[in-house]
Image (cartoon, rainbow over all chains, first blue to last red):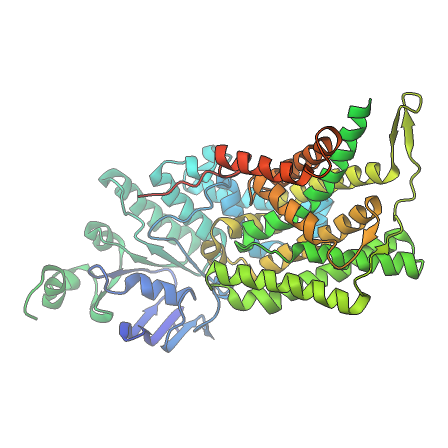
Length: 254
Length: 293
């Protein structure tokens, strides 16, 4: 059984069918791409997978558990984490604390232990700090741990979002346009980071991206959406040569 | 020496405002709403102490703890019943609901306990401290109030900045949606905020009525409004802002009572607010709001 099994997923906003009849199967340890022209419904799919929107039809099954329509925090606990198209860090908190918010569900001490700073608190905090710093090292952010998130340059903020998402200990990581606004060097570096995250953590990654070199370069399977429906699926080569995909991007008479 | 007496009493009154203002500012920061029923939670808390300590003769500390429990439950219930169904409604709807809850609490108190003022027995047993050969006398209430405020401020700051639950609160106040996607339970966090705010209101009520010993159903209204002013003064949403705003407000009020006019002291307090907001619209420690275009 696949890690994530999406069947016949759809959502309508009033009369607008934003996504319809979406099937998607994600295996552990693989890299998937979700592409399509602007307004095709890619972020809407992410919002349904993470519980921000409640689908009007279909099912989402993660690791054998039906998570359709569950609240975002329950889905986060179940093992899906994400980043955002427009960065949404906790900008007034430090880089380290941002990552620690991601670890929220792994905390075992209670409020009073925290206020009174009992040994159990110190022990757990040490452990969390260690874990958080390890994550920051992977993204080469350990030198900036005590800066405020808003003080980081743009490319590093994108990386911090990925680190924060990984801190929730996910089985599936959703990246919404991770390379947006990056220069070719940064994009190249990000490709390597995404690959190494997949290898180190053994998780599945599903990403939305407009940078075709990026998507074709790292995704093993690509799903193309247009007007909320899947119009093509396959590896980079198949997608590149699919006439429907070309028509969707460049316009054409179908 | 007289100035010092006025100043210390002002700090004590300001400490009460600060404790109440913390409730306003935390709820505003995390739930993004103005809970105008907060002042009336103080009143309910004071009645609990009045009956537990004054009528049934329980230990004063036990009475205050009991009042904290009652107010915590009351605060969580108000949020659950009146505000949570309006999560996502326009803020004006929530504001009007809060005013409605405020009137409801006042009227219920009037039905239950009548409107005649009760004389509140101080919960503080500490003797006044006399200094400089009796020139400066500080009452036990004043000392306990200031001490309680300082201890609570320190505990709250440690809690917010150094515990995971506190970080979750900060995260919710910055970006509720993103926090939820990181696994933070937003509803539980908001409930906890109301619980903390209401528990502090209970402490503030007991201390306020110990210093100013008349209790009636409208007792919470004026301190509630002033604490709100204090929160705005310090920068609403900011915890140190509520502390500084509260203390300053208490000091300004007491000094203007002493040196300018007793009748005008409230007017002066509100005038100061207007001036501060003209100069610094986000309050003393408020965050600058950057509007992106």
